[in-house]
Image (cartoon, rainbow, N blue to C red; front, side, top):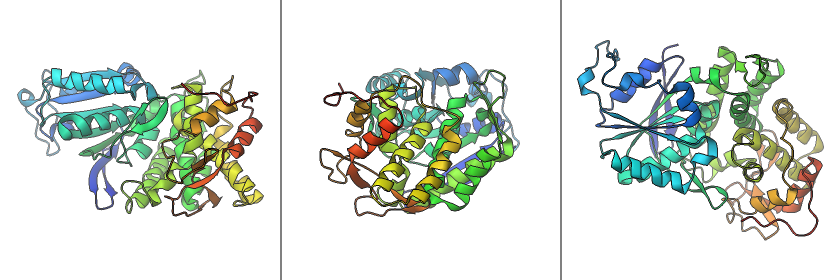
Length: 413
């Protein structure tokens, strides 16, 4: 499938051209060369490098010429040098030390203001690469080439960049605009079960927030067994058929961009996409980086928020049942691993969430987006966030089988 043009419009802040197709390696390489950088700084992670390390082999001067968009071959001799930096996988790459290492590498490689950063990987890799590009020479040219379903529809549709610091998620970062977004959906064929489910988890969030066709598309994709959980024989990998994948990507991109069209920096209406994230981030950190894929953590976080909303009298039991049924379409396929961390550890981490302070929470309160029912967000003057007692989350955690410690909550180093 040749690349089709997309447009990512972030209010009046930026409009980013994008292209999406399948098996479009040559087209992506040409899009990069068309920017005429003096040097390409290719950032990837260990897994992507092992699976797709030769994906950009055509960019190297010794390779055969690539046919340009006009059909005219590019001149091999004019190709810029390609420098590659391989980071750890997942949130482990989003550290201060890795950001420092990227800076040292860039200057050691002779990067200039004409150089181009190519972020080639999943959401975490794109987060740290975007932050790096935003800081290098106070802003360096950046292209995103996402390799996971989550990155294709949920990270490309945001200007956020970040790293994690002091045991917290995404508490250092910037907003930064890439020059291009280049999506090759063929990468989804090699995604392990957890990564593909992670991307579907963020689509569950959109379905709950927006309802309508987003909920219908999500439920149809999962309830009709279009996901083949046995593909590959080992049970560790599975696939989405091409038509379902294309539909889910279209819905995911439309969901985010329809809201960010009026809120580029996700401060007001765009804050709704933080739904479920307070508890999600806490669960992810409590288990340790790389154990619970982010989108699945978000879907579990949504269950905690619906529990709180019902206890607060905001959501009816019938509406909570409908909401949770949608979540379990996915989560029944991916139960939380054992042993679970203690409820107190999760709560202690939730109390350090990066959104903390926007709602002027008391010491025993946390905040998140809450729903009255699917498609009906509770509006608030505090960035669409609502605060509520963390005891409600603790009650939910215990109901979900998280062990309870006697005495005081754990302190997080």
